[in-house]
Length: 438
Image (cartoon, rainbow, N blue to C red; front, top):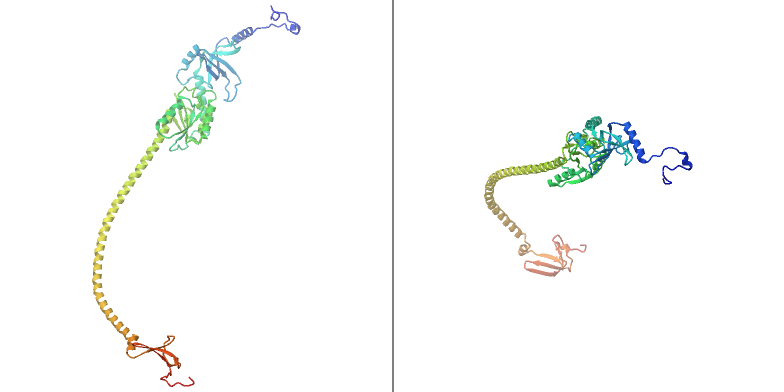
């Protein structure tokens, strides 16, 4: 043996330790023996699946943990291995029915031997069987309890009571962005030829903690000012649909301020999310088709409305035209009678005017001649011709009295055939003679 060999005699302080020393394999062998004595047969163990993964050889590994919140660590966890040949047996037990597949977050009851995995030095359960009724019972109990809770809180009808927009073109799609469900949903909208505005909110839709992530995605979709929210995922077994039966998702859908349409690929029953949503469709394709149908109904209703308006307008126009034609005929008849009547009245008036005008003209002619004769009688020239004269001073003022003439005044006297200029020597009034006092 070398100086460092385990069989060498201890020295110093170590010499006082006379206990046996084991190598790792010996320790694990003893632990395996203890575990084998404690669990000599296969045992049933229940817990929640976490960290599930599958190797290239088909083996499945996961932790079976004490159920805990999505954001919490379990109090206890036991590593589990499901070798490929037992995996095929388990899949036959589960079958394609409602029990579905194992996935993160699902509570299961499984059986197998407990042993020590020496290569890693860890305790593990080698899974060989599963109790599908346990998982189904847990899911059913949780679903029943959640529905009762939602009903008591008045949340079953809350989202269903929201009005669905007549033309919901702004759609928030909550799903795994790269999934076949998202692709199917997009394809239906794209083929419709309608101008959709699609807002994709990416989130995992299965696995441990997916319920909390879906609820957060629904809250984020509400902030996008969408007309509707479409919550979709492809088909799957009931265990894979567990997030849509969770309290987190159910409350998020029920309390959404935006109408939620679900398109979840079911195999048997509707999920709680379907029950509280505004509208539940069987698949993502059906969900998108429902939106397209609603938009097309709006288009047809709009077209029908315009056609009704057009027909009503044409009918009103035709009715108005008939009324106008009738009024035109009536007006033409009345106008003709009115014109004939007034034509007769005008003819009579013209005849009276001609008669009256001849008499009036003759009367006025005579009157005019009388006025002309009177005017000629008052004509100053005729007066002058009869021997009268008109005398004015040099300023042109008319002399009416001898008192207006001073001796020596120059006067202009108009006769019928000319004017005489003279100087007053003496002015004699017919009323008396001039005196010095005058």
